[in-house]
Image (cartoon, rainbow, N blue to C red; front, side, top):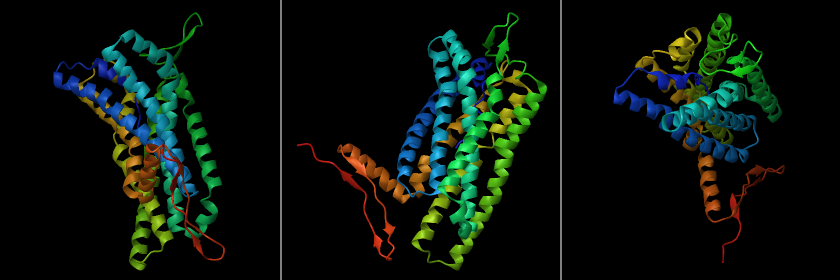
Length: 363
């Protein structure tokens, strides 16, 4: 999840820092290339596995939203690795001109706005997962009518379209029109749109802070404090929970943990983003070691936030771990996988079918 700013000018920071100390340069290399690459690859693989396994979970609105979150986080990680890791590798080990062309023709015109839209989508998907959990825990009788697959599908489509529309100005932030009428994207200098004072302060600083941090944070705090209170009260009033209640509580714990990761990883990004909005030149010239390190740490937290949901599912989801083991066991033996579920019939009897591998041994 996915929720901090990958600064479009991060690459300038890693290249323009004035430090000649080997320790600082090594830190910058590790935090701009190796750690983001490792965390990003882990996150992409983990999100893909999570999506596959969540497809076979109960057909509820929560799992639908979690699948959408996995897609959004994966898209963000792919874009972020292209913006930061690929560019940094080419700059450090190959050709600066090639890296410049990549940034000018691919990263800035297309990848960066999509990354921002994916980032915003992950934030608001996290919010709506908490809203869904709040309704399920605090208003269980209403959840049957509100928390439906249809509602979740409409929510996901609305979030993704809304975030894409909101980030449309990003496509023009570095778009320059020359005197001869030729249109091109620049790398170091923003366009009239991107350099406009109102745009920078209102859109890049204030609205970013409100829509990607402050408002989501306040909603998540209020909802999850209430959720924790209700869960603790139910635990004291009814220590012996039903199987259905235990499942709901496990799903809610997963949601709470995802929100906690958002809190831990989401506090540093507004600082670097605000600095980039009000003083973009500080990211381009005469960078201090502190600014470079702060930005790199902030961006690394982006990768962490979008990569750890797989670990959350493994930690809290016993069925998730079982399905993961079964999937690899089946794949190892060349079998196809068949998943099935427990279901209560109309006559009150419970029919149970186990997960199995279908196939045959090689002779």
